[in-house]
Image 1 (tube, helix red, strand yellow):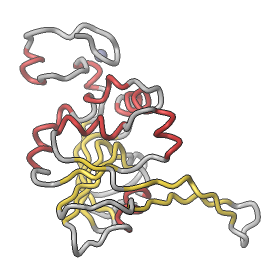
Image 2 (tube, rainbow, N blue to C red; image 1 turned 135 degrees about the vertical axis):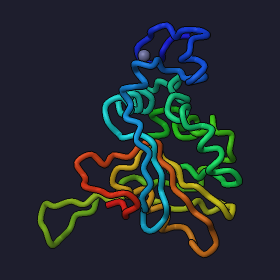
Image 3 (cartoon, rainbow, N blue to C red; image 1 turned 60 degrees about the vertical axis):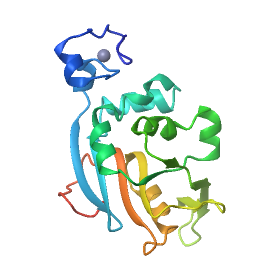
Length: 209
Ligand SMILES: [Zn+2]
C-alpha cells in the first residue's frame, strides 16, 4: 500500500503499523497535520475538534473535496476512530449539508464517506439552500451573503445527535443547523475534524466566534 498523499510505500509490519494501524498516510505526511484537540462552544453547544485547519490537513481536504480524490475518505478520522466511537456511542451523526451544486459537482457526499469509518448511525437531515445574495439598501453596493440551512420536511431526528462537519471556520453552518433544532427535545453535541482558529485569540472552552 502506498501513502495517499505522497505515494511513498507504507512499510509492512513495522512499528509504525503497530502504532498507527491502517493509516492511509505515511508518518511524514501525517506529521504535517497539526493534531491539536480542542473543546469549545458553538451557540452554547459543546464542540470538539482534533486538527488545526492548516497545511497538511487543508491540502488533503482540498484534494478530497474539490479535486474529487475519494480515496482519501478514511485519512481524516482514522487516528481518532476509537476515541470518537466511544465518545459518540448511542448517538446519531447528523452531517452538515453542502449546496446542491456542490453535491452535483463532486458526485459524492464527502462527509458521508468521511464519517462512515466510525460505524455509527448517520443521517443528512439538513439542506443548504443556494447562497442568498442580498443587497443591503442602506449601504449601496454592499452585499451580504447568508447561508441558509433548513431541516428536511421528512427528517425524523433521534434524541441524541452529533452535528458533524469537516472543518469549523466561522461556525455559520453549524449555527444555522442549531437554529433548526429544538434543544429541549435533543441532546446535541458538535464535532469537526479540524478547526480553523489561526489568528484568533481563543481560549479553551470558550464560545467560538
Ligand atoms: Zn506520505
